[in-house]
Image (cartoon, rainbow, N blue to C red; front, side, top):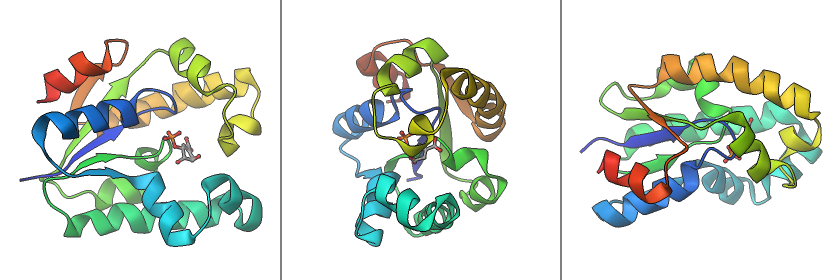
Length: 160
Ligand code: S3P
């Protein structure tokens, strides 16, 4: 059984859909950001603050590469993960990468007041530009693309 990785912009619904899909399928759920936090012994905002983004990206890469030792898991990746070629290359060819293509306005409403470091350091305009650039990368990395403005339940059912 292969892993299913959910990717897409911050706030696109990766975590909600991932948990729902895991519940439907009985498969193990992995939140890659939580794994990074556990491993680092600190939160992602703390990691960015104390060690900088590059340290976080290196840890993120190690977490993606470690998925090669897991099978049958439902994985939500962080919003940056599938935009880096080294991470896409580290995904097993047997795994399925699903892009939740949720409109920027929906993502933005969900993330604008959060403590995500990328959100805190960016203007709304910068976030919109980042969204557009990353969208091309998600599309290239994904083998399945779902319009993310459906309910989490419907999206999970479509992947079931
Ligand atoms: C990031 C997204 C976050 C987290 C980190 C960096 C990004 O994950 O990995 O703050 O670069 O977009 P979510 O997409 O789950 O918010």
